[in-house]
Figure 1 (tube, rainbow over the protein chains, first blue to last red):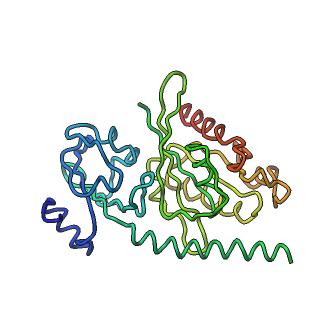
Figure 2 (figure 1 turned 120 degrees about the horizontal axis):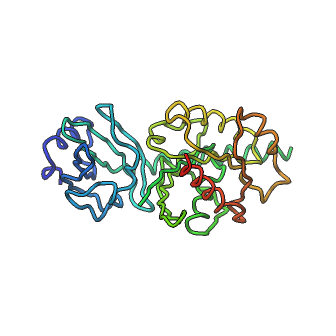
Figure 3 (figure 1 turned 45 degrees about the horizontal axis):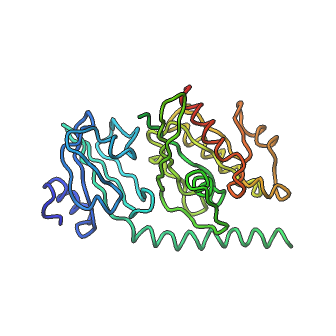
Length: 132
Length: 165
């Protein structure tokens, strides 16, 4: 799959060691018009993307994020409704923004097991100490 | 269509996800499932004849092993700061979270939600105490995701505040 990605995205995925992860990407201009997209976007709940249309119409989760002053922005563990969890990586380019979506479902599951246990124990201990 | 991003903030297990589920689907589950990262749901409401799409960012609760990252607040138009009346420590977490969000996105409308009003006999603090700890005139609403008390209202009132802002 990655072989069909633009070189910028291929290089980026290599640089963060995510070359074998499910991923998708968008390229939007500075005025937020969708220029290009590809990859596994369906699995993350992104559908009905239309080239040359404002990205906010089809992907409202990006609402309020732009413009970005930083060269790079990452927001981890995002889930749209009940689709797969992903990390968003936004790369600020001269002409627009590359937005890369990388599958985070395995890491999400590991974190979920840990925090579920820790938080349940915390609530349980609290209840026990209350009854004593 | 007008789109507005609303963040759900608070300590773990205060009922943020339950409030969203009650609001979106009208359902409630007694079982606690921790949220990892953020889950985004949408709901459209009508306001003065205009359709407003609310993007509800249900952000994981702060616990002793993870603090809430401010990158999630980016672009927010408003937020609900949720407290669990049965756990006083959730009040301290809420105060800390309010400071953190204010340093990222200054002065956006918010409502303090005192949740779990269905078990009021078990509350460790009341509205008066919350008002004293917050340093300005906050909008404070009691709610219950379990019974549905004030759930529609908190989102409606926050939307009004956002649109007037």
